[in-house]
Image (cartoon, rainbow, N blue to C red):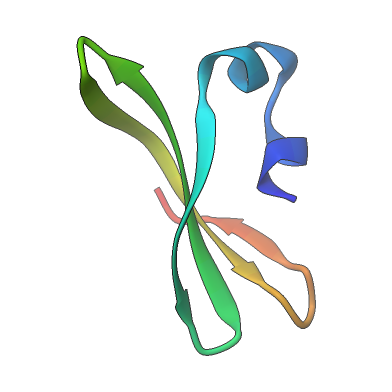
Length: 57
């Protein structure tokens, strides 16, 4: 669901990764690897009951 929120350029550049679950929400991040380091672009919450996606950062 977060992947579908990204533009075509972002889909090619970033990786979408699950971090953890809190209650009815998943915490997801988008990031890119630069010189062996992870540079986080954004964090999202996804409510698995309502399927609501919210950008946190």
